[in-house]
Amino acid sequence: MRPVRLPSDLLSAMVAHARTTYPDECCGFLIATQDPTEPASPRAIVAVEPAPNEFEGERRRRFLLRPEELAAAERRVEGTDRVVAGFYHSHPDHPARPSTFDRDHAWPWYTYIVLGVTASGLDGVGAFELDPDHGEFGPVGLAVEPTADSGSGKVSKTLRGA
Image (cartoon, rainbow, N blue to C red):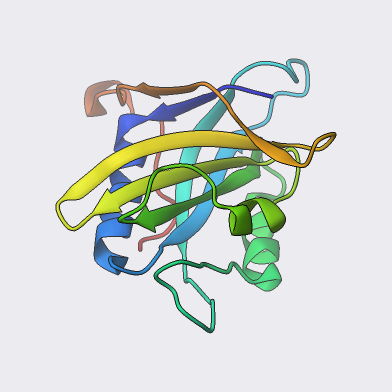
């Protein structure tokens, strides 16, 4: 399982997204650079892309990203050194760890970032990956790093607004 590097401005963007949808869950895509020569290196998230929560029931405890949304996100990064490397979503008033429902609908290889949010803001953040051999989520290292200052060129960006 690969550790994750996340610029602080992207964490802030995910938290802002979660706060706008609270008390419902938010969701979106994690975009990372792909280095085929270093498959075991930390996964460097370079953009987040908010997506609509398409769950047709109680959105306070569930989210759904439609397959066509994932396909569109993959098309947007096609031909670049970027990949859709995972997903993020919020857990309003619940811990920042995957639920049984999350596990039952997850895919191996992808990174899952879960934000625990309350009415007053972020209450925790965790990164996870599904172990394909055991069908369980395992925590992965998450390093939230300072964002490069605008004078040296911004390292990361949000691909589209919430």
